[in-house]
Amino acid sequence: MSTHGIAWHRHTPAQQRWSWLAWMIGALVFVVSWKQVSDNTIWDFAWDAPVAGWDMVSRMWPPRWSYLPQLLQPLWDTLNIATLGTAIGTLIAVPIAFAAARNTTPSRALLRPLALTIIVASRSINSLIWAMLLVTVVGPGVLAGIIAIALRSVGFIGKLLYEAIEEIDVRQVEAITATGATSPQVLVYGVVPQVLPSLVSTTVYRWDINIRESTVLGIVGAGGIGLPLAASVDTLAWPQVTVIFAAILGTVFLAEWVSRKVREALI
Image 1 (spheres, rainbow, N blue to C red):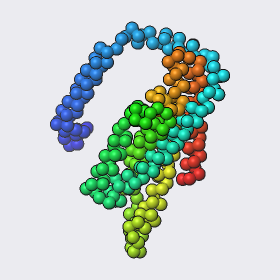
Image 2: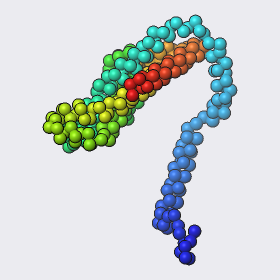
Image 3: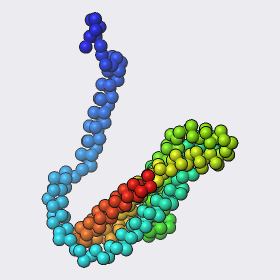
Image 4: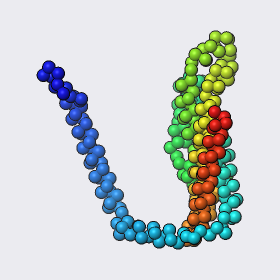
């Protein structure tokens, strides 16, 4: 495109050179990464995967529905892990979020960096890794799963909540402050009502996620339905694995329905 003989370009020559350089670096990284994956892949197994996969699926049918009553207690443990872990994580995350938000932190120099570090650390470690560590500390069982879910939830809830705190309408805070209210009163009547819907929505959403994550914690010994799943896979009891998958799917659908109803009722 040109105007009065002057050519128009979307990017300057320097920007075009940097763009080409970025594309070349990206292509180089892709080629090196693919070669690394290819060198560490046994391609005979990869090509045979469809046959092996179909063989495994055929062994999973028909499901052994008589095994279903034995899953009721593990399913109940899974729900308890997700629910208690979410509740504990929320109780820990709320004060951390207020300490991390710029407009509510008591100390920007000390408490805010500490709170942000806790949030980042919690979000950086998957709940399965937390469970692996906690099983060696508190022993195998439901307690390790609850703590793992709680530690993972702190970062998720804390991050979304402190961002919501920083985005509140300052005019409401200023109006309450102008009445001579103390700092705790400003917090209770000016900040909390604005962030409460976000807290409820985030907590329910995190509980929904934790239901899914709790189903696999038993693989490392942290309780829940993951324990019979790991045992069935180890013993090649594929018809039982099908029943466990169906139970997990039903539990996830139920959690999704409950979380949706709760959000509609409270928000």
